[in-house]
Amino acid sequence: MANKVVILGSLNVDTILRIKRVPQPGETLQMNDRSSAAGGKGANQAVAAARAGAETSFIGQVGNDDAGKFMIESLKDDNVDTSGINVDTGSGTGSAYIFLDENGQNSILVYGGANQKVTETEVNNAAEQIKNADFVVTQFETPQKTAIAAFKLAKESGAITILNPAPASEMLPELLELSDIVVPNETESASLTGIEVTDEASMVENATAFAKLGVKNLIITVGSKGAFYSTEDGQHDFVPAFKVDAVDTTAAGDTFIGALSSQLKKDLSNIKEALTFAQRASSITVQRLGAMPSIPTKAEIEAASK
Image (tube, rainbow, N blue to C red; front, top):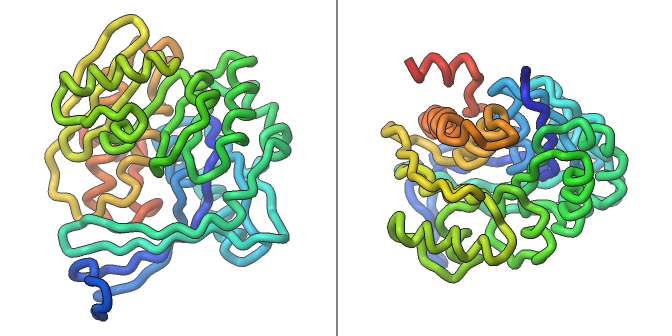
C-alpha cells in the first residue's frame, strides 16, 4: 500500500541561468542559456514523492498570477492533491534564480513571496489530509511557526514528521522537538550543532547533539558521498551514494527527501533500504538539467537498480 505523504512547503518558478562560472564582483559575463521550470523545495519534494509512488498532498500558497496557476497545474500533472494550496491576492508567487556553472554546481537566489505568508489557517484547512497521512514533511522556505502547527496536528494523528532544515536558518526549538526525523546536509547539520561534519565519527557526534535537542532520528546527507543515519534504537550507519557524472545538482536533496518518504516504513524498520532507494533517485536527478523536470519516476528508479 502506498505511503500517504503531506508536504508543507514552497512553490517557486525557477529561472535557470547557465553560465561558465559565477561572476566576480563588478564583472559582467554572458549566459550560455536561460530557461524556466516549476520548482521550490516543497514542490520538488512533493513531485519526487508522487513520482516514486506515494499518495501526495500539498499545503502551500501562490500568488494570484500566471506563475501561481503554472505551479498548481504542474503539481496536478503529477497527481499531487493541490486542494491545500491557497491563492494569496496580496503577494506574488515565489521565484528562484539558479546560476548553474559548467561543472554542474549551482548558486541560488530565492524570492519567497506568497511562500512566506503561509499560515496556520492553510494548515487547518488541510487537517483532513494531515490526519490521514503516514508522513508530514516540511522545510524552511515557509514560516517555522506554520510548520509547528502542521507537526502538532501530525503528532496528534500518529503521522511521522520529517524536517528538512534547509536552507540553513535559526530554528525554533519547539519545531525540533516535534520532528521525528531531521534530514540536514552536512553544512546544515554543523550550523545547528556547532560540530563540523568531516567523517563518520563526527556524524555520530552530531547525532548525539541532536538527541540532546530532542531529535530521535537523524539523517545527514553528504552530497556525492552518501548519507548517514542514526535511529532512536541506537542504530547508525553510512549508506554510500551511487557514482555518476553530475550535470546539475539542483533538486538532488529534494528528490532524496521525497523518494525517502515514499518508501520508508513508519517504524523505520526499512531505513537502509529506503535510503538506498532515495540515493538512487538522487543519482538520476543530478544527471539531468533542471529541478522538477529532472526528478525520476519509480519505474526509472527501479530500472536503474537492476
